[in-house]
Length: 304
Image 1 (cartoon, helix red, strand yellow):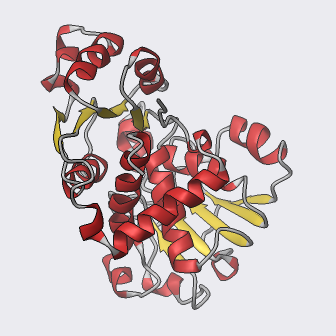
Image 2 (spheres, rainbow, N blue to C red):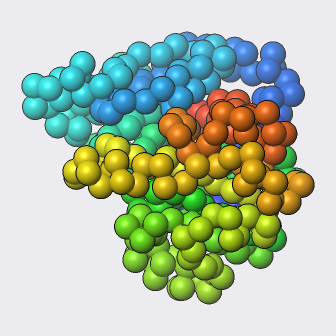
């Protein structure tokens, strides 16, 4: 039995196979429509989510399975003080696989250690978001044709952004990756990312404040929102929330084949006028997210 806590839980070869399955699902959905007949996915979400939770649920339903779960801690026995360990023991009696989101770093790992069914980390605090990373990798590979030899700009909340941390961790294993980190001083990447991942693996990177200064050199621009829920005071959030806004004018500085990704939800950081630009692929990214989660469910249930 396997769990998914981090993108590094799968080797590069296993990730390639996972993405191959996802691409086959995209092309041959009927072939997979009943592969999870009789199987149940539990979605245990201790904090709000739209895309991730619905994407998991849609993935399981498209595979012919069923779904149960809760969408907030208030609607679960966590409100009564039940531990994650006890909750997963209960869920293991009802379901065949579980996707868990939790505001505390490491909570899904605690669940996995006590579970008798596969557990998928659907986001834990500011730590990891591996299935979003799988979505990002598939989006890039499908639209660019590769995952090597690219300059990738990550813009916005690089301090608390778990999607950013997971993506950096995953991409360190590919060749010719060059990172450009675009953020205000207060939201720079954490020191452990810089030392333990980038410096340790001799991965080239630079840190800048102005997005316009680096737009022409990027192959991928990964925008993120400033996350209100990660701030300790409202004043800091208000000061930084509109620090970056991607506009049509800024897009004119970019390469003709640069792609804009965003894990969503979007607030103000991408102007709606950019949506019409063919290089804006964040809604395609959502579709790829469902396919890769279908492939992941099948893989963890050992059905492929």
